[in-house]
Amino acid sequence: MSSATPYRGRFAPSPTGPLHFGSIVAAVGSYLDAKQHLGTWLVRIEDLDTPRCIPGMADDILNTLDHFGLHSDETVIYQSRRTPAYAEALDKLQNMGIAYPCCCARKEISDSALHGVEGLIYPGTCRNGLPPGRQGRSWRIMINSNTLIFNDLSLGEISQALITEIGDFIIKRADGLFAYQLAVVVDDAFQGITHVVRGADLLTSTARQIYLQQLLGFSTPSYLHLPVAINKAGEKLSKQTLAEPVNKLHAVEILMKVLKFLKQNPPPELAECTVETILAWGVKNWRAENLIGVRASHVPP
Image 1 (tube, rainbow, N blue to C red):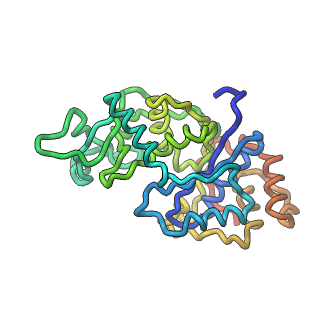
Image 2 (spheres, one colour):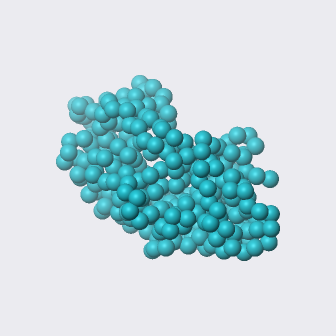
């Protein structure tokens, strides 16, 4: 990435539930990093997985961000409206001969697959063609044997052998929906994203996304993975762990906690200020280097 390239960052929530503390950490961290670099900060609604999306939740998320002083610099885009772009990328990968149809159901895979860094490793059943009499249900991308290495601005050098740790992964699901890994790569390229600042829970997705970027001829952004917010039991804050939605009426208090969580050491008197003043202080004093090596942290009291 050329230093002369204007900084373009993004926050990309999924409308499967309201924003919780961990979501606000990702939003604020990406915003502060973009603004300190005099960059553009975008919001993208990743509503691709329509069965899991909650009606009205996208508007609720945008309203919550407004209460925290976090406003997209450009028009918000919605993945659910970008299916043709994902189909075009799939066509390109098919024409390259590295995307193939797969007939395997989850149970068939679980009967013969090993566990990798993120679930089952696909054993390659359909890699050389569909078994006789079977129809393709999903589309997978063919992985090579190279180890993919990238530098994370917080966590240092990360390497992943996709073929042994992930396997050929799905880029279009059996239900006809395009997979997250393909959509996020296409959208980051479409929006000209130069820097991805997000939670470390997505660290294991990064190698797959870089692999697809390389195949599709897209630039690879810089990556900075923020610490994951965990509860007292050491679990990542999420809908599954019953994380509480952030209270929009307590935006000042929550922003102060976020700055402490991100190890930015805000002065106590900042708690008497507006969200705009707190964010301005955060932009001016943002030190990403304070997060080096930190993958997870508890929410401040």
